[in-house]
Length: 214
Image 1 (cartoon, rainbow, N blue to C red):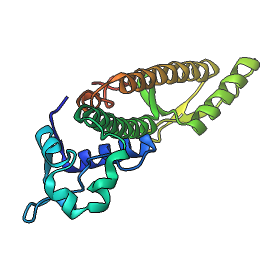
Image 2: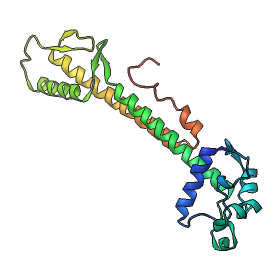
Image 3: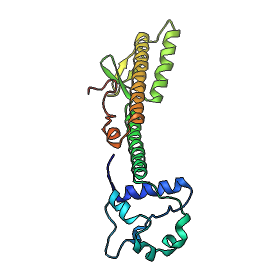
Image 4: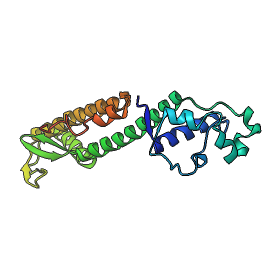
């Protein structure tokens, strides 16, 4: 776990801990506005800074914020430990990385809508899948498949389709959809199980899909 936090990550973690405690501003937390004159808001925060400028309280803090750090603040709750802030920052970073990766997976899944059958590519989106299923059902229920039935592939070629051919197309579609669903489930599980932003970001959601040469 990092021992230095970017200022924004530190602030988000601190505010989350305060909000979750339901107790308001903990004892000894120093607003950055109470830093000594000439000290700018830092880009990063370390444990030493947290201890030096946020402890019970520095002498200049009581003068700058007497309503928070004067004699009346003794009953305020204890401030979060540096370890708690690091842990909360890690949870927030993981949640943000997980959401971004889940969105990427959803986009990738939505774009995976073609499958291969008889050395051709076919549409496998919801509407196309329904049409194929209806045609395949018809093929299994008739003994006189009409001549001249064609199915249009991804390249807009009109392909003559026998009853056996449409049943084969439906079978290939079903197998592709099952493989696609299992790949998505594997990736969702990996995203959920990862425990650091680095692990989450390293998950490649673009490879391993059926009918794709990775």
